[in-house]
Length: 255
Image (cartoon, rainbow, N blue to C red; front, side):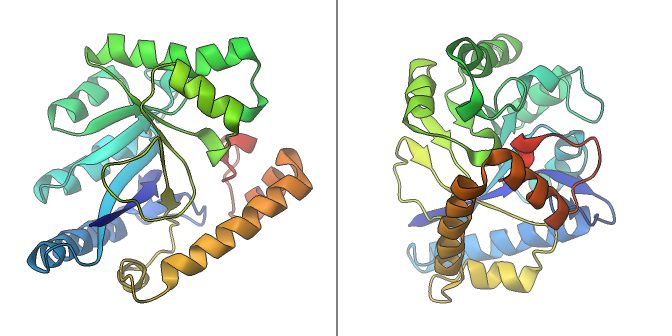
């Protein structure tokens, strides 16, 4: 059975114009759909796509709004944490929340130390963003951390080699594609925008609809635009198109 890893960020009651924020009630309907589709896939002996839920950054809403929805439906998720923000940045989870998620059966991975684009890092910065983040998470959680998601989805061979050297078994990207089990060294994910209605999600998770294939083509075009424009200009255009809220990050947000 192929799996489609879905990437969420912040939840908010009532939603927001900012594309990285999803209405908490809409997220609840998403998870209801995932439960239904998983049951149908089991009944059909693995036909269809199996939806998996992931979160990036470590926003407090992941614990306060998303976790109760997941727990009520018996769904676990993978939370990737910007470790330097833990317990220090307003609106983001602290160690108590992360430990509670871990105790509830959710997976915890790293999302760098400061959310800096890894392709912009020096060797010393990579050690902090990768190895430093993993060690701090392991110390704080008392468990091994072997997964990493890429800030802004940016990577190259140098970054992947540094991730391996830092002890990560899997690196999660922002490239939309279905994955077969067992997972390889890189894992694709689809960023879910705040305007992703349930009907569209249902088509997305239908392998015969062609929606995912269309998103894969769009992602290749977006990658070409990043190379042509450069990260700084691309980030400015992305921020305008996605109605990024002031103070909510830098070019590392633009995926």
